Image 1: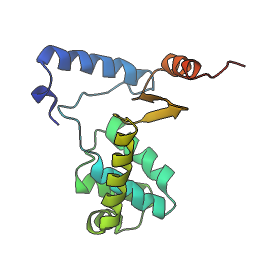
Image 2: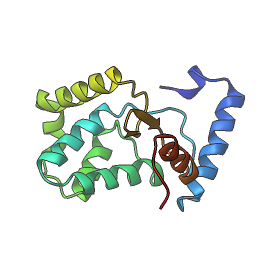
Image 3: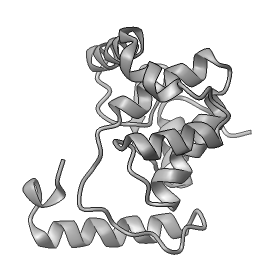
Image 4: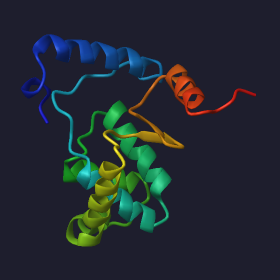
Length: 153
């Protein structure tokens, strides 16, 4: 999804500034705003291959770093192959994620279930019947948990 097709230029600039300051809180000082939001369907299918191979955490961390810190494209097969290799996945992991329908079917089933319960973004956190979407500052999580009934020690 191209940002400039959905938001006016001033809104794109505001989002870029927010993301840059937010990324800096996580040690990413060279954040560059992209001109589009990638479709993560293929990257998520590859995550299912990683799950089957017992390397989900390694892949997830590698994919997040590749996207946010290294500017790699989660829709590009060559970039996905690089992420897979660095994560210790099998040599044919990317091809299997495309060729074997079970992986995309898993993603479609997860997305359908998420839609049924009202999930609108990634990541989404659920406590009881309350949900919070998106990467949020710590204080937002504290408020969310408190509103959901959590008690401070």
